[in-house]
Image 1 (cartoon, rainbow, N blue to C red):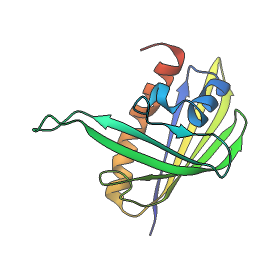
Image 2: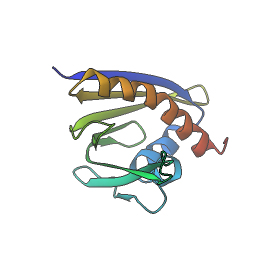
Image 3: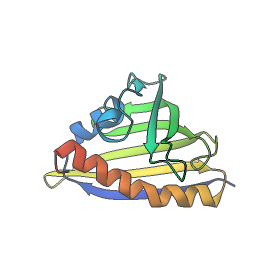
Image 4: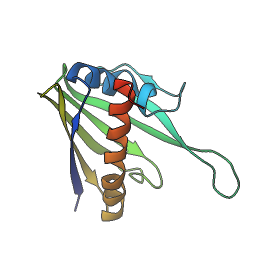
Length: 144
C-alpha cells in the first residue's frame, strides 16, 4: 500500500516566480549552493543536496535528492519524481506534483506527494513540506 499527502499554502510569490524556483532555482531556496544539476525540462534528471548541522560529531550531513521531471505546464504545474535516502523516502521513487493557481496578489500552491512505502516516511514529509514551502515563499519574495 502506498501512502500520500497534500499540503496547500497561500504564497506571496507569483506563479511564474514559483515555477522558476521549482524548475531552475532550487539553489535559491532549498538546495546547498553548488550542488544543483537541473535543466527543468520534461524527461530530464535533476540532482541536488540539502545539508543539516552535524550531530554529536559536529560533521555536517548532506542529503542527496534526485529524480526527473514528468510534466511541466508553464507557471501552472510541475510534476517530478522525488527520491531521497534514509530519513527521506528510503530510496522509494515518489512523485511530487506542484499546482500553482493565481490567487489574490500571490499564488495558491498545492503540493501532492505520493508513493511512500510506509507511514513514517509520509508523516516525516507531511511535517517537513509546510516548513519547506514557507522557506520557498520567503526566499523568492525576499522576506527572510
